[in-house]
Length: 303
Image (cartoon, rainbow, N blue to C red; front, side, top):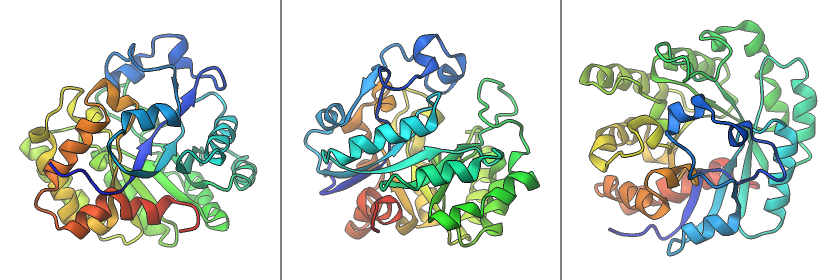
């Protein structure tokens, strides 16, 4: 299987529990386990040097750091900016926000001082059937007028917006994306299908087609272990990934390793091998877009 000749990894986490507080490292978190299974093997510190060791043999030119649910989102982002300034890797930053926060504008002003911060995200996931798989305050959050009124602030700061929702929430997400055509949105995990049956696939496919009609959306294909389980195989994900790329287009999809969480499942080299296997029918230019081009243009500072 061909190794991509260049990579911008669209979804990774760097963190250090001695610098930022992560409650799920202090005590067992049933919610995190609901998504990734037993995480005893997850390192308590994961830095660029660790990532580069895991990615050895692959030409990684840059990564997109995502916040990791620390107790102080701004402090965590400042710490990540300091990593970026060391120059071991090109690093774009995606920090945490709460669009119902009355002090959101002040938070964005603080983030504006971090030159590598090009995006923010809010966790809006809500699984109706499993209370452990809920990050949002309530299931109708994206329909809240007060929540929506804050989104235009992102335009002032030139920030992309990540909203990671489950498949049954995609109609709400689509309305948000349509309502704000001048904001760039990212969603992830293939639109996070929960129902993996043929009927679930058909419903999900319709929603992805509606999402694809919005020019201001990009899909981050990553964290497949959170959808298909830590023992997932290529055949589990193949039709979902192929349909996503076919529907949204290779020029609007990007792939990420989700390291180090993916280390609980496949590890870096294996997840990229599986991506390459699933992309075997893509052209060389499409493969370059998926592994490098889209994430580079969408997230990297200066692009």
